[in-house]
Amino acid sequence: MKRTMQAIVKSRPEHNGFEIKEVDIPEIGDNDVLVKMSKTAICGTDLHIYEWNDWAARTIKTPMVIGHEFVGRVVEVGKNVTHIKEGMLVSGEGHIVCGECRNCIVGLQHLCAKTVGIGVNKTGIFAEYAAIPASNIWICDESIPEEVICCFDPLGNAVHTALSFDLVGEDVLITGAGPIGLMAVAICKHVGARNIVVTDINDYKLEMAMKLGATRTINVMKEKIKDCYEELKIKEGFDVGLEMSGATAGFNDMVNHMCNGGKIALLGLVPKDANIDWDRVIFGGLTIKGIYGREMYGTWYKMSAMLQSGLDISSVITHEFHYTEYQKGFEVMLGGQAGKAVLNWNC
Image (cartoon, rainbow, N blue to C red; front, side):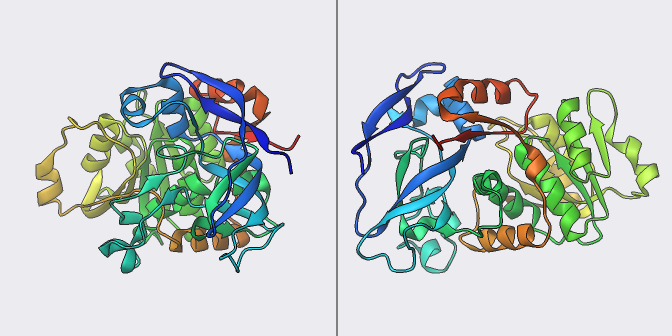
């Protein structure tokens, strides 16, 4: 095998600051596997790194290969790895945990305080090859399309968020129709929610939400959420809320439209100075659960099983580019007229 590969590197600490570089193919340790990438997907985190916002400037050390959403084939395994074989189709968990803290040893690895993010805190997967800990590898069903598998990371976010509470027969409000919010629409529909109402300010994305199974969409710049109550027979508010927007206004809309005893799963990164009506939370008996990443590895089992039983998120994947055209992928997602953009590494 050749000794170098092409990779997308964040070379400079500035807006964009990306370039394709020839770098060494990583060597694997005894407990790692080497994966030849087939497809990778651009995440919202990658967009932050592209834009070089405050979080990225504080977090990312340049130069670094970024990216963490992928599908590929195993081409080499470490000597201690027995359950993964060369040629297997795989994806993987992007959070590497310590395995030793209290949360890790009781099966709550997603709450590990020492989590290291692939493509954030360590070398990422926007490259021809990547070395991944075998414990993070997920062996994939060959019948699932590769472009869907490479989106397992954000799909896992959506599954973790949506399945935090019972959805059967419930009225669900989703604030934010980004890729994860759109995937959540399909999940809520798949598991039996009664009504799924989606809010956003982007009509293109709201139209996508309808195609994925939303009962009703609301552009909050044009309509009020309560306008849908009578037509959907919603009397006291929503039973479950999935906050995906990361906007203060979206979070407030959700809090103010929950029924008493309603349950909110909070995935969107709301600004630190966001204010909400805490009286509504307390006197309404609301539950707010923070969501980070995916449960390891229950979420992976659930999303795989749902895809095998008919869940379809393929329409969320709207664009695919050769990896050398990565710039187009970033631009189309930042332009707001896209779902997920995928980069193809098959030369």
